[in-house]
Amino acid sequence: MIKIYNNNENPPLSLPYYDYLKWLKSFVAVWDFRKKQSEAMTNEGEAARWLLKNDEIVEKYSKLVLEASVKLGLIGITDTVLNSPDYILPLGGALISNFKRCELAKTLIDTHNFESKVIALSTMRPLSEQEITFYSNTPAKDAVFEFEAIASGLSTTFDIRSYTEETERKDNYNLNWTIRKYSEKYGNNDIYAISAPSSEPDIRRANSVDCFDFFFKRLNVLPHSNIINCTSQIYCPYQQVRALSFAIKHTVNFDTVGYIPNQDSASTPKLLNQPVNYLQEIKATIDAIYDFVNRFS
Image (cartoon, rainbow, N blue to C red):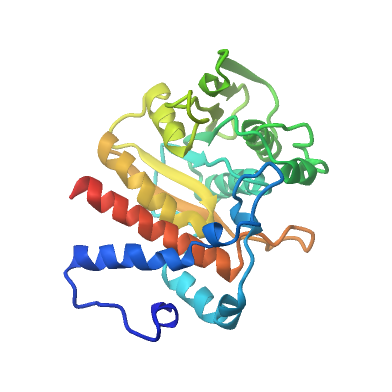
């Protein structure tokens, strides 16, 4: 696949590991379709992976891209290697993922009889106009923020409604946070939904790093805990690499699994399963590996 985008030349595999990683980091910029496709924006002007389109080259080699994605772990990781998770974390996202990631958490519990804490991690990211339209015919029809969407996913999936909340509200909206604990359990599993504050509130809203930092701080996660991330399959390698920094910092074990996209309904939007999406996330994973090596080497 590299040869196709590298003038039919093989990658320099004879280089020392770090030099090759630097070369690879530079090379994969060719797969930054979010940067190339300026039209892949929500109506609010934010870049959206789910709006990317295959170009002519991607269409031509789509079979090869998908085969490589299976080998690289972007397709097919549905079950965990952890036997006794302490935490199962559905990760907030866009559109149907806020339901599917909660459903994946339930599937893991039902399949393995897990007893853990299910904690949906999210932010108060405002939903885009497209997302609000998408949710209009779902249980999340009143959702305005990502937190509300994934909380709806939790309550629908686990059939739970009542809860207590700990919240903090500030004039700077980026500092707001919520910890919602549902009164009902699912089996022996406690259910939570969390919205994290930003660590740079004057610059941006909370991101995924803020979510994990908030989770570790407020849930008093113990060393050697086993944690499963529930995401979309295409993000499994990227999310797992990003989780390694937290695994080292907090001495915990992470595994990352994903739901199978678009397998249940012809009406489900065909999102994040096009070859262009896989190339974009291969790039993101290599970027994450490069960052990890630089941080810890």
